[in-house]
Every structure is written in C-alpha cells, then in structure tokens.
Image (cartoon, rainbow, N blue to C red; front, side, top):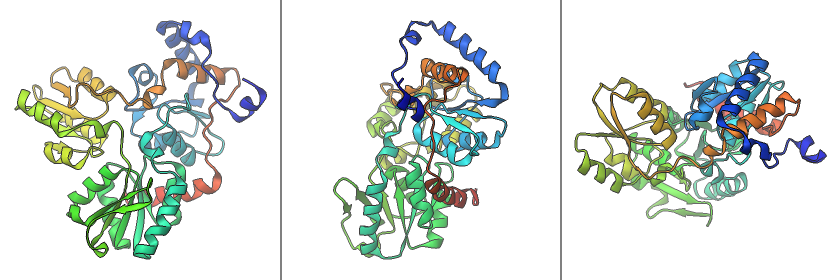
Length: 368
C-alpha cells in the first residue's frame, strides 16, 4: 500500500498470506482480535452473509436494522459492517462523527443500488416535472446510495423498507398525487398493487433511454417506477413455481417482494426478509416451504429448522455475488489492519449528503 492509498483508506489486493491460512487459524485470530477490542468493536452482519462471517457478527438483521443497532452502540469506535456499500453508508449517516465505519471489501456493492445514480435521477426528475409538474413525491428503497436518499430528502420524500413500504406509500399519497419510486420497480409495483392501484396506472422510467414507458393517458399515472431490480430476486420465475406445484403440491411458497409481480401473484405469501424468517419460525413442525430469497439465508433456515421441509424456490440460484465479497479472509484483514492502527476501507458520507439523507430516513422513522 502506498502513502496515497493509506491516506485515503483505499483497499489493495488482499495479502497473499490470507490464502495460505486455514479456516481454523483465521477464526482463532478473529476471535482474538474481537476479545482485544471488546466493546469498542462492533460487527453487524446482514442476513445474506456467509455463515463464516455471520458466526462473528454481534448482530444480524436487515440493512436498516443493523445501521440503527450500530448507531445505538455508542461504546463502539469501529463498526466493521459485513454487508454491502449502501448499508455501510447508512450506518455512517446514523452513527456519530467519532465512530468509524469500515467495509471489509470495497467490491461489496449492490447491483440494484447501482442502477440509480444521482445524475440519472436528477435528469429524470427534471423531465418528469415537465410532464407532471409539482405532483410527485420521491420514495426510495433503503437499498439505494446515500446520494439517492439525499435526493429524496431534499425533495420532500422519504426512504422505505420492504417491511414498511405499504405504510410509506400510503403516506406519500397524502402528500402528493403521484409517487416516483426508486430504485426497485418490483417492490414499488407489488406494494402499489397491494394498495389497490391498478397496473394500468403505473409507468416505468428507463434511465438508460431517459424515457417514460407507458401506453395510455399520462393523467392516469399514479406511480412512476424506476427501471431497476435485484439481480437475485429477479431470477425467481413463474416456471420455478410451476415446478414446485408439480413436485410438491402441498408445499407453501413464500417470496420476497423484490420478486417480479407475476411471481408474487403466483406465490402463497410474500414479505420482507424479517417477515419470511418469522413466518418460518412460527410454522408448525412438518410444514413444507419453498422460499424465494437469497440462498445463504435459505440454507441457514434449512439448517435452523430441521423439523420442517424447506427448499429454495430456485434450486439453481446462486448466493448474492456482491454480498459474498465479504468473506472470512477480508474480515480478518480489516480487523488485523485495525489492530495495527490502520483504518482501511473507511465509508464516509459527505456531510451535506448525510444531512439530506437523514431527512428522508427520519420521515420514514417518524411513521415506523
């Protein structure tokens, strides 16, 4: 690492020695470092993380929940976030200036969040205002960059989670005639549909072509969906459901609302990651489930509930590739760097962006 890289906290290639260590050696070192730092170190781990990382997490949960827990942990100087980039950004926004948020591998991004950058969004907003005037309120899924959250904050909008999306969309319609939903079209579409808004009143904004995809009278549009998606959940299909129905006719199918409308409609139930976990926990022994969400989590639920027959809705589904960037070697490398007094891979959100993003987060939290 050169002086500039060290000063900027930029990640370099993982040192070769980590590939030569056994899992047992790495686990022993992580445990040792955690004991050394004590309460000054906090490791949040997202539900989609690998087991080799989750076992060292001080808390597991979804992205916003973990950021809030980190913010409540005032004794922790270092927050080593085992998730993806936008999650670490939210943690930095909610924690104090004295706390340092670190992402073990800077390559751990989110394809959905990356589908909406701020330049595209600002350009879309101007064009949509030309069409609809001051009749829109922006909402963004928390699976978005800090800059997109800030955009919503300064334009009177808010963030949403998959758990509270319905409540937030209902609130948005008390403020404006239309909503502009970023960056996941499927969560936006499923939520609006569940609230009684016909599909015919929903349009899609394509940021690649800067065009509004809609056939009909523009005055009928109530929801404008950003053309983005989760690369994992979009890979669950109606064909997967048909296969389950054929092979296991007595099996219930539960999916995440980031799946497309057709998949959600064909399933027995749909809900947030928290909802899926709690539904399986409460299900009776012997019940059968096909789950349409990230594979690391599905495998963990299978292991945790041996009294139930659980399968992935798509047996050929891969785990989230960007989530899987965070592994035991990168976690150990980040921790050993801290042990040596080196703060690497620091996630620091610009103060202005953080302040505006906080507006969007607080509007949501006020209605939680």
